[in-house]
Image 1 (tube, rainbow, N blue to C red):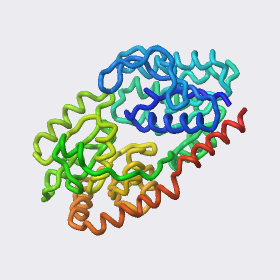
Image 2 (cartoon, helix red, strand yellow):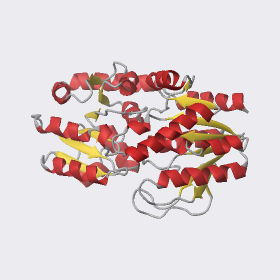
Image 3 (cartoon, rainbow, N blue to C red):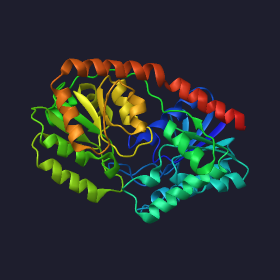
Image 4 (cartoon, rainbow, N blue to C red):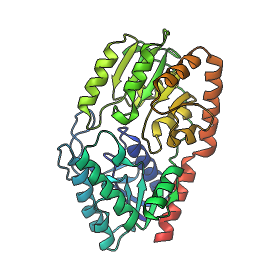
Length: 372
């Protein structure tokens, strides 16, 4: 089968959950003998380094950089449009769009007679970082997916109900996948930031308003503990908000902001964290949460269904946006290491049983086959 994937920034990148999902789906499908092409944005990566300009192969996947207008609000719009044109020209059996914004040009593929699948990773127009114009554009992508895609995949029960109630559209529920992770000793993170096993609590994700790192910083400020708080991640069209978070972090010497991390440093941060915290207001199905569970970390999340359904009693939840409740949850865990260990073990077991990549890939391929 010839499969095209559109919507990610860069295949193989750790910039966000969509990139992780697309990379895993693509390379696993390629290993099964399918011809997979990913259309990536051109320009620079998260570290400011120039990306490839010519097609190349990565883990058996053909990667095609497409024209991208590198201006705020234009990168996703332009790259998904040019990716759609390039994919139509390649005549795949199915084009799989990832996220709502990239689905805006989906009708072009439909008119060209190419089957389309749209995975909704979250209701992105709700995210606080977007202004009115950007939210309207993303909502158009959502409408195109609901009304024009041959099949729509969602990651959670709330998203499934949303599409049913809003558009009368039935969807396929296929959650993200993960695999159990091998624990790494603290070496790089000790050299870089002086961190050791169990000496810190970890927030890892994009520094954007809907993930609420500022709420976590406020809760941490009044906690009596010698542990550090690590805020790891880069911004995503949110440089002003990132600066605000940096100012808050600078007021507590126990807080470390690492910036974007990947590779060995990322694995070590997950492996040696005392606990992982995600106080988000809005999520799709957070890959960082699944990864923390796969490393056997005790997880603290807001009680939004997209997080609470994933941890499902193997972690701690608190009422969304409630500063006092978050502070109380953190304080209780910091004083009870045996509970932290037990919850972490249960979390690892849960992802091994419920969220294997093989199942996710097979369900997705079954959807393609039904269409083709």
